[in-house]
Amino acid sequence: GENVEQHPSTLSVQEGDSAVIKCTYSDSASNYFPWYKQELGKRPQLIIDIRSNVGEKKDQRIAVTLNKTAKHFSLHITETQPEDSAVYFCAAPFAGNMLTFGGGTRLMVKP
Amino acid sequence: DAGITQSPRYKITETGRQVTLMCHQTWSHSYMFWYRQDLGHGLRLIYYSAAADITDKGEVPDGYVVSRSKTENFPLTLESATRSQTSVYFCASSAGARADTQYFGPGTRLTVL
Image (cartoon, rainbow over all chains, first blue to last red):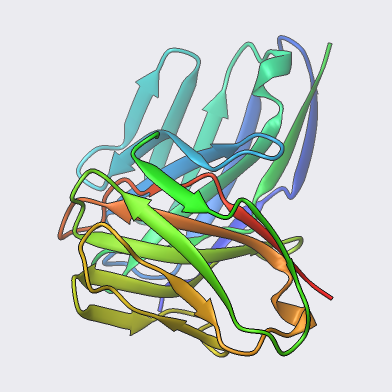
């Protein structure tokens, strides 16, 4: 199956700074890479995803980059705000429609 | 997100009791999933279903049973609850036959005493 590693496990930044979270995966056939945000006590919610036919995707202050050769993908958040504080999970697929999730990154944005 | 619901939202039970967690979605999604979330382990897949009457094991299926007689419902049963099954359980659904967005329910916090 797929193995997904996510780093760092915790990240503290000052408001307005950028944050980068990186994930590596093992299955070279993987072709879909979502990122989920989970606020305290809430459900995980998709914030951005990328398919393997593109190298980068942006949505306002968030972007995801994919390096298929190195088998890693990263979440970039610019101009961080306190409401960005949450746990972020990356995921990669296995066996068709299943997702393996990374261990999560707790992002803290200090005002 | 209101299209996928879970009940109960909180449950306290005792070791050895049978517990059923309910999941209902209104989107007619083919795929449904059960995850457990524990500190230090992220989200781990327990069981999934590709369609009504089709289910299969995930990463951590031991001690759990699922069924899917209707597309919209995917109950998860703990046949004899153990303390190690204390966790937050999330149900999710997905429309596509290929890897696609999974939409999560609000979760059930289960405590086994």
